[in-house]
Length: 296
Image 1 (cartoon, one colour):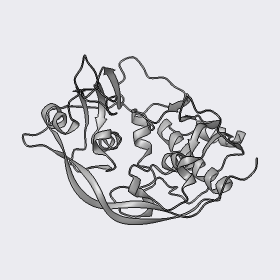
Image 2: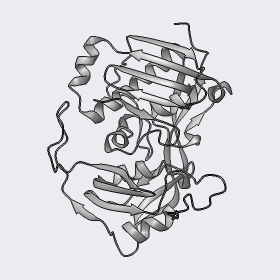
Image 3: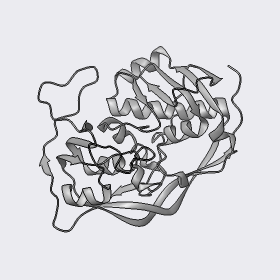
């Protein structure tokens, strides 16, 4: 598995693998919005990790995740917790000291040879989810993070079918790839990717992952998106004129060449979908205690 890089604008990326990873760990309750946690109760940890104050202020937040290692550059503990637990809303993280957002760290961590071999037996989406669980253990070991999970009714957007029905093409997704084996030509795998200025193309994209992808659109603010379409298939579509990040200051359209359309208008007009505001049971991570990182 190749290293995956993230920045503040696309922290979780736009691939099916990352979106799917957000759904891991439904064992903590029946909330519509769930955090990432181990279903089997087994705690996985890095074999070795270094945590140092970050001196790199120019490049911003970067994560690298691969079967053998995890690296973070200029990451706050707030960033790390959001990444590790799949937090989509600011209201899903409660408590903690102010330095969680103001102090930054560079991290290098590696797993054991035995764990690398175990990683190789996992599917790509499972590898990413396992990496997040490893970061949870790092937070517990080096920052003495102690948390509890509560379920609260919080504002969300429900992804539903708009009046008039869907305007997407339902397709059959090909089987998931075997680890270490590249896709054959013409393979139809779930993915969503930018294909132009303010344009995204989806291939065999399921609606639960569409909801996850929309959760990171700047227009939805701090509301997670939950799938209430009832659609169980996979869909091909192109979504045009939209952006996942806000326009630069002084540029209301975001681009002098391609004006930006609101996601709330684009979804019903182009895909036959709609975002409806509501409240839903949501898993919340409550920080009970945390400390400055221990020495390497």
